[in-house]
Length: 342
Image 1: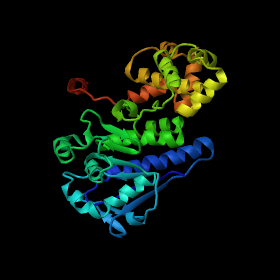
Image 2 (image 1 turned 135 degrees about the vertical axis):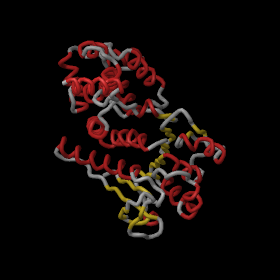
Image 3 (image 1 turned 30 degrees about the vertical axis):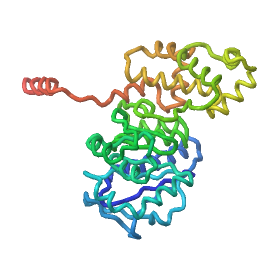
Image 4 (image 1 turned 180 degrees about the vertical axis):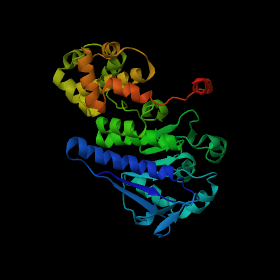
């Protein structure tokens, strides 16, 4: 059962607290609904001084489940975004930031949202590592933390178990990625569709990843992954990939799974589905053309595989990601004129 904790200080933005919590709850519920069983998730809202609740600067009052000092471990610790300048929170944080360091040392993943990256930088954990923050705080952050490798062009950064996201929107992208890691691709896509049906950047597109999903030390397997990524439509098989690598099919399969955590065929299927999602979002290609480009033998097989991975048909997914459009002033004016003429 994945466990998550969020630290609450009065300056925290409520949306950077509620959105991660709701996504994790939804993932657990969808897991049970789809699989008939599933992992629950334990989410705690933690205070800093033994309070039973915290009133945020926005006026919203949130009940607390405990105190940070009592937390022994959690899989994910989130530092919520700070409203306006982080200085006030940083000045008061000296007493509890060592606890954040301890949790990271025990194996917790830590994610800061927006200007809360300053809190993570104060711990020293980001020294020599990539980080991002809210764009309005770039200059001050870079001056205050010269040892941190600020990535101005990325909305998300990752280094081992340390993540920084630049905005509340980006915490949604990170949480979908986190759900995929703990609940799988199918649940992640269902959550993503539920919370954000419009087209968004994928986590991999938005993030600066110090260690990518293909980051391992097996050069032969990395070459095989690169070959599949460059030729997703080819009729790959374990036997052919193994031959390219100079290995027996059995050795290749064993090494591939050890390096990536997936079988070669499962990796290829996920790769093709990701390519199909991008084409559905950003192109007007017919579904049959997308099926062919992504290596599916027929539109029906493509539709079946896509629905299995996302719980949506390719057509429904395309309609969902293109569902939210800005209406131009001209279009509004034209409708108003038509209404008046009627």
